[in-house]
Amino acid sequence: MGMKEEKNKENRYERACRAFRKISGKLADRIAGISMKRMAVYAGILLAAALLPLLWLGRYNVMCIDDYDYGRRVHDVWMATGSFMESVQEAWKQNMEFYMEWQGTFISCFLMALCPMNFKYEIAWVVPLLMVGMFASSTFVLGRHILRKWLGADASGSSFVMFLALFMFYQVLEAPFEGIYWYNGATHYVLMQSVWFFGLAAVSAGLWTQKRAKEVFLCLLACVLAVVVGGGNLVTGLQAEILLALLVLYAVVVNRKKLLMTVLPFLAGSAGFLVNVMAPGNTRRGSMDLDEGYSAVKAILLSFYHAVVFIIRWTPAFVLLIWLALLPVLWKMMKRSKREFRHPVWVTVGAFSVLSAMFTPTLYAIGMVGLSRIDNIIQMVYYLCLIMVSAYWMGHFAHRRSYEAAGETFGAFLEKTRGRMTALCLLLALVMWVFTADKNTYASISALRSLCNGEAETFYAEAIARHEIYTDEMIVDVELKPYSVRPALFDFNDLTQDAENWLNLAVMQYYHKAYVKIVD
Image 1 (cartoon, one colour):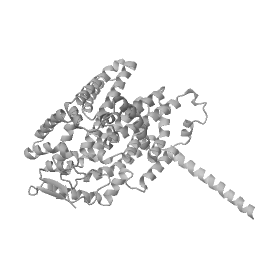
Image 2: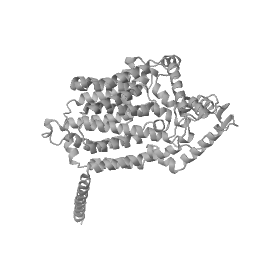
Image 3: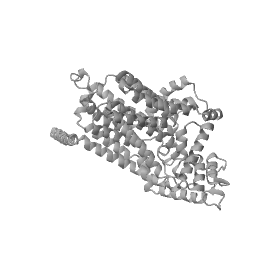
Image 4: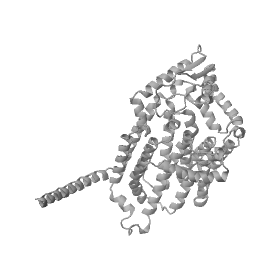
């Protein structure tokens, strides 16, 4: 009797295995039958769905932190005259004074003075639209261009890869508030990095185009954008200098007919960068700054170390799953590519060096890394490097002569999955995304939580109530209650009980009050 039961169990196990193979085979056929164009559409819909809560939460965004200090004079002119042109003139006048007395980032300071909330307090919802719109579109344009032109991928596959990369980035963004909602911080870093991505794409596109008129237009556009980047933050500016110099070297070695296409933007960007770093205000500010940076050599060496540390930090299980999901797609595209992929080691070293260089300015200036508003842009550069370097290695192995005789290689394994690996890894990533225990782990889920539980609406009502007190000319001694709730993504520093705190003073001066403080 025991033998019979054991045999029945074996038969049931075999039937179950056959059924599983049959179902998985059909599922694989269905997955393999989905065109790359449709996959790109699905990925685009996923990205849009993920960004919607972040932008919707922006409806409850408010003015904060340095927005008051940089915008005070422009706000005063606007309130006195109602003239936008006079407000712009005041912004430039303040910018020139800052250049002489405080900092050389002449483009960033000018834009930061023109905070939209200076003109209408309730318009802070435009900030996330601007920052997400610029950064997501510039990253998509640059990443898709690299995949298509430099690596030889097809249009639909490149779009699929970049949509997923952006979806991944906006879920694990180092500091969502400083990269999406805070005008001053996001303008200085995210907006300037966006301009650079567009500028780099313009220079690169000029190298590939065969149309003279288009090349001239792209060159002029790149020159203008390079000057803007040179007048922004030093992290993006240094990155631009390095990459433009490499493109000049590429043109010299590979295609001298395109030399002007790279040299002119490089010279324009270098001019803007020199004007930035040589500002008298930088010297004056440095003499008052108590933080001491490292020497140039030590800062560069430490940059490589910190790059490794942050690569580990920015590669959690969620990112690994998205990366694994992309590998079969990258393999298929690179195998079909006509490029040669002869220098994978140099490409890897170059990408790592460019990434590491982004840590150098703060190490040199103040002897530290980890400023979250800066980390946002470094993190995106890392993900771009990860994808492009992975694609290059896929292309290298796919075009090796020994590939056909290699037998069960990694590439063969990726091909045999027939889309199942991509589908499985994406499914696991989505399950992790939606069902995470801590609903503030991923940005979109955190934003949706704050919208659904009423935190965002309550916070905004209290912020508007504060603003009504600020703008009441009969109230000069301002005492406020702390916010009762606040969305997790709005993690900015609030006013304190100390009326002499720098943020309290900024709000006091902005609204011309005797004092502003928090009371229990």
